[in-house]
Amino acid sequence: MKLDEWADSRWRPREATGGKSAIGVGGDDYSNWRRGFGSGCSVQDLDYVEYRFERGEPVVVAVIEVTFYDDVPAMRHLLPKYRECALARFSSDSQRKIVEHSARLLRAPAYFAVIRKDLEWFMVNRLDRNEWREFDRGQYRDWIMGLRPPAPEAL
Image 1 (cartoon, rainbow, N blue to C red):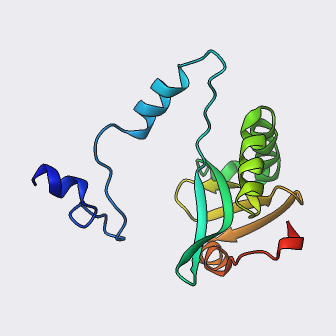
Image 2: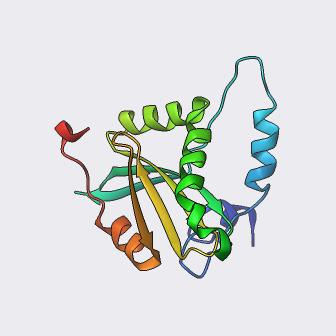
């Protein structure tokens, strides 16, 4: 591949799902390097900004921050406590503030999702309502596919 082809997204390698393959330094490498700047120069990544196109323009429908957990069948009864602890940890620093602030600027609801690593169970909290919903893989996909721009008064 020639340099000019690498820069052209039409030539960029694709995953099986059609998404662009990663090229270059891994996200963790950059994240670790960038977070080390210090001196009041803060940074926060947003995990997922869900959007739809309306009249050819992107419209954000949700900002979703995610965390993953290993499935331990003998411990499943503790999942409600685990998700509350994960939410408390997420809320204990600036991460939640930045996610909610970004969602407001994008005029979309903010969510916190606790996802089983095998992608078979999803626990999602709409942050402005502290409302948990649980989904299996198909239900989560349907929920994502059903997200629409909220009415302005709903935000």
